[in-house]
Length: 250
Figure (cartoon, rainbow, N blue to C red):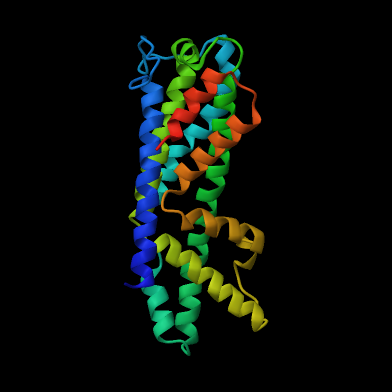
């Protein structure tokens, strides 16, 4: 069995686990299959922020407004597979090397943009979790019932996350492009060859981006890791902790 097959199988296995996590998140949000099942209706169609919600809602709304653009750009991402193959098959052809590099550099700029958006999304989620677990109400189900504009934003983050990861998993060009960029840039530095686009991603950022895209479901990993970090840092009641940790039970 090849290493590539083992790696692919492992990625899909982790992806299935994370999508079960997402299913649990949706159960929490829609309040089904919970031991303490509440009884209320989430009116996502007409949910508007109250004065108490507005500050957090506006912060998150700024991020969510950019989500569609991110998905559109990711869906349109074609990669530089042809240029890269030509360059690899003809290593002494400088014109093909330059052509591949010129094709990859702007794509790396897009991959950087997607990664940076994941950081913004993480910050938005942190704000939402803070609002939905504050001491305003006794438990998180009351927050979902009475702060429905925030609950709707939480659902929109989940929807974006699922769609982003779906698009990423079906586009191998993403990792191939970034791997080629890093290999080529490393070779240029060794040979002291100046490279246009070298400053697009420094080494530290390149490592973080590489780890991000190496995961089968990078946005969901960002979401789950952020929630786990939030739960570990914030002192919550026992029921509230159980409520959110139920999202990650498998």
